[in-house]
Length: 178
Ligand code: SF4
Image (tube, rainbow, N blue to C red; front, side):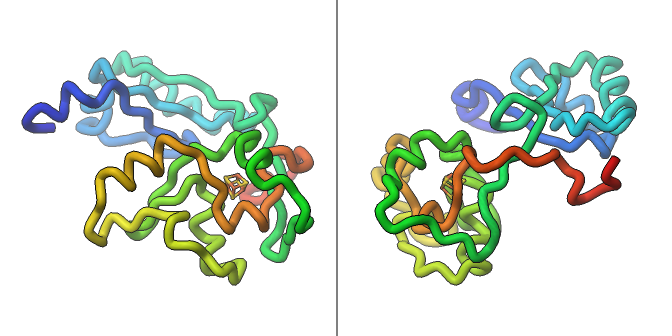
């Protein structure tokens, strides 16, 4: 990273499901002081063992991630047609939501959480412009600062159970159920 930006970035965390081992060049880059690899712990034997061995070989910091509830489980935040009660305290729900600062960018659009991004197209939600940041449009730095400093419910939050939904087994949806 050139100029003074390298000093402003305090840490870099790379999230992975542990199934891919990076190239030698990437491993060398990850061995820098500020980098940590976060491996989602799906409780499946040997999924990440090869990766962990490599990270240790290169002296790369890593940690296992037990998901938002820290219990090794996911939480059901509702299906595509989930509609929450109209009298719900949406502010409280968002402030209690473990994902409300899980900022996610896809195709130049940043939302407060990963669910809020596909919600725009899949849930047929009448979205508000202030719910997202479009990095491909001219950016007002004050507005961007406010976006990250103040948690605010998005329209997608009204169609979501947040992180307090029923616990469900992690990742059985993409692999074999035991
Ligand atoms: S959309 Fe759901 S998961 Fe995302 S911040 Fe709102 S309540 Fe939380």
